Length: 278
Ligand SMILES: Nc1ncnc2c1ncn2[C@@H]1O[C@H](COP(=O)(O)OP(=O)(O)OP(=O)(O)O)[C@@H](O)[C@H]1O
Image 1 (tube, rainbow, N blue to C red):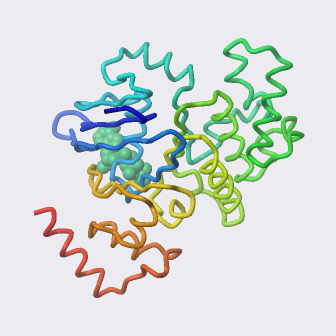
Image 2 (image 1 turned 180 degrees about the vertical axis):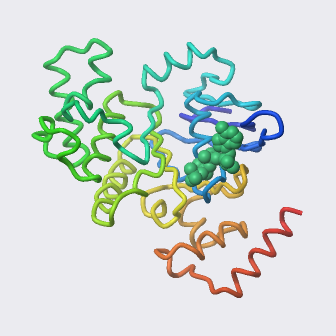
């Protein structure tokens, strides 16, 4: 059934920790990303968003289920096969803090071009592709000569995205890409994500904030205590949420004013949520 899916996650289970600290963190998560789709994955702190991303990248070993990229099963692979896959860059990951992707001692152009140089691409072509990617993320190619410390947080995040895009990944995962930014920089990065949504890039935008995700995604998944409780077109999830937990999230998102709820309604939703969990 992976048919037209770039990424297919099915019945994914992840346990973390050892002994009495062992936790069932992801519980039967199932979802897929179709080519060119921009999908949001939202949930509060500790719901398991980053663990799902880490499982897709082979950084944690699932205890059950399946992860397929372009129909190729990844869960059974060896650690070495995962490393090769990450080097090939089929799935790329952008951190909340762009400084984790960028070496402070390297010029921007060197950091963005590094994945191509590792693959043996000639220097002239690397320079050309770096300029192309910087333009694609709405930055002046002249920034290639600067160091990360000379740039704003939003510029750095767009550079981390350029570095991730340069390998032409099948899936781009962005983990809280705007959470550490001030509002002007956040707007610049969200504008870029809107552009990527309109392009053929397939992306998974992870956030605790439905307000950030709403404007730049086609579909939204809601994660609650390791379970996907909602999966639908973003406009439907925002305007007619089916699950009480989603209604609570929308009520707490200041940017989604039409959905704002008062304390009494919040208490009712919490009771409904507790009842739904039996
Ligand atoms: N190494 C570990 N051992 C045991 N439990 C862990 C480990 N890493 C994470 N967890 C637990 O797994 C759960 C999910 O964590 P995860 O980081 O995936 O959540 P998240 O939704 O991404 O949260 P945040 O938004 O804070 O990053 C949390 O309850 C966390 O305490």
